[in-house]
Image (spheres, helix red, strand yellow):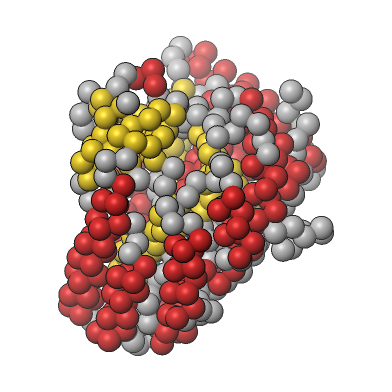
Length: 488
Ligand code: 5AD
Ligand code: SF4
C-alpha cells in the first residue's frame, strides 16, 4: 500500500516522510562510525493515549534504523510523560537524575522528553534551568513531527531542510524545544510499532472540551478534534489485514465523537460502521463521559456481536454537591439512572469507573454518597485516585482538605470497591466464556493471561502459540478482580 493512501493530512505527512529519510541516513552513518547498533528506549508514563503515542514514536525509531530496546541506558532515551496527577511529574523528575548519570558515561547519548508534562510552560522552564542535559522537548500536539525534531538533534537546528519548518522551534542552552499550545492538525499514518500484533488502539479523536475543574487534560491535550470516520475505518481495515482482531477506540470522551466534523456523525453511528469490518472480532472503546452517553449507544452495544460488553464510565464522585464543583454536568441521581439503565438493558455488561477522593471541600457525607453509588451500581472494577492539585485548574484555587482526612476516606472507598467488585465478578463463576489470549503470565510462565469480553482477566494453562487467539475458558476460581480458569 502507498503510505499516503490513507492520511488525515497529506502535506504534513509527506514532509515527515522526507525527514524520516534524512534521519535514516543519520542513523546509518552513526552505525558505521560506531560499528554497532544504535539503540533507543521509549518509556511511557500514563494512560492508553500515551501508550498509543509511544507506539508512534517507536514506529519512527524503528523505521529510522534504531534498535529499540527496553534498557534506558541507550543511545537515545525518550520519556513520554503524563501530568494528570503530580506524582506522575515527580516520578519523571526523579528518573531524569538516573539518565544524567548514563549521559555522563556516554556523552553521545540523547535524552528526549515529550507528552503531557511538556505541554506545560512551567515544566519546560524547569527542565531548561535544572535539567540542561535534555536534548529535545516537544509536546502532544506536534508528536507527528518527531522525525523532524530528532533530525535537528543530530544535525543541528540550523539545518532546517525545508522552508515551511516549525516556527515554534527554538534552542535554549543545549535543548531544542518546540512548544505548540494548540493545533487543529491531525496527522496519522506515520509508521507505528504496535506492542501487540493481534490488538490495537485507534485514536478516533484528540483533546477534551469538558474542563472538569480538577483536570489538566484540556490544557495539555487541547480542544476536541475528531478524525473523519472514513479515515478511521480505513485504518482499522488495514489493521485487520495485518492480523488485528480487537480494536480499542480511543478518545478522552468518545461519546462526543463526530460533533465537530463538517458532516457530523454520532459515536453510535461510527460503531455501526466499525462493526461491519469483516475479520474484526472485538471492539472496545474508552472513555465515556456519563453526560453524553446516548440511548442510541446503549442500543448499538446491546445489539452488537462485536462490541464488548464493558463500559468505563467515570463517576469521579457520588456527591451531587462535589460533582457540581467538579463541573461534571450530572448529579448522583442522573449517574445512578444511567448506570442502572445500562445494567437493565445489557445484563451481562461490566461497568468500571474512576473515583477521586479528597477533592476540595469534600466531607465525610460526600464520601458516603460515593460509597452509596458504588454499592448501588456494583462496579466490576474501579480506579480510585487521591485528588492531586494541578496548578492552573480551577480546583487548585478551592479550599483543600487535610491529608489525614483523605487517607481515611480513601481507605473506606477502596474497601467498598473491593467488596462490591468481588460480588460482581464472582457472578460468572463456573461459566465457560471466550477469552482473547494476550500473553504469557508474567509471574507464572506456565500460565497464559487473557481477557473476557467484559474485560475481566483470566489466567489459565495453555501453550504460547494460542496468543492472539480467542479460546473458550471455564472461569473456575474468582480472585476478586480476576479469575483462574481452565481451557475447554
Ligand atoms: N487528581 C486525581 N485524579 C485525577 N484524575 C484526573 N485529574 C485528576 C486529579 N487532578 C483522574 C480522573 C480521570 C482519570 C483518568 O484520572 O478520575 O478519570
Ligand atoms: Fe479531564 Fe474531564 Fe476531559 Fe476527562 S472529561 S479528560 S476528566 S476534563
